[in-house]
Image 1 (tube, rainbow, N blue to C red):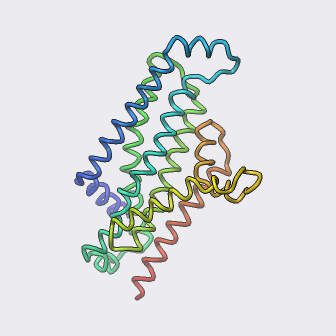
Image 2 (cartoon, one colour):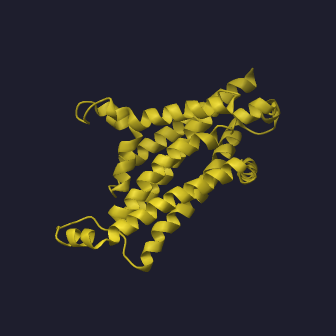
Image 3 (spheres, helix red, strand yellow):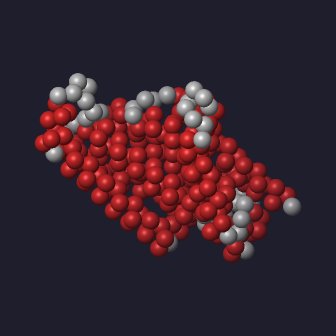
Length: 249
């Protein structure tokens, strides 16, 4: 499993697409971060915040906003990274060799999954360096900060699991990318179709946005963590089952 993960991570760093995505994500989030810091430092904003009891601080205005955009940007780029996980093996004709290797389906899927997650966590660590730089001249709400980081990690883990499963279904990476994006976008906006949370509690629970935003606000709830664990576990199990059925055939 770890050999497959290391191979997958190495192949990502050898891919121009992965490096391009890494650069674009850093530039976009860097500009967003700089603009929010500049907004927070404006004298008018500071005077308004000082006159409001319990006003939002540096963590809310800068860090929370950056991680909101982090989730949106990874929603767009994750399908480009997950599309080749298994579909590339199928397209190049190396999948039968992989399936015939003396390794379990669990090791193959988890190896692919951990390899991509390692790359995504490296990207997230680079993004997190920006909020951490605020310690030089300000203070952050540690509880909200770490809750937001946990939220992003769980969100990326869910994106990766969904993309991996879709990639097992087709030999065309483009089709896998479009299918993954469709599922992620549906989970992102599903609560919009259901009205308020009281009118449609099922849509509200299925919405990946609701659970993510709660963690960004520092509202740690085991229900949100369990939701992501269920999503991750479900799609990893589906991926293993699908490959296992192909091996039997």
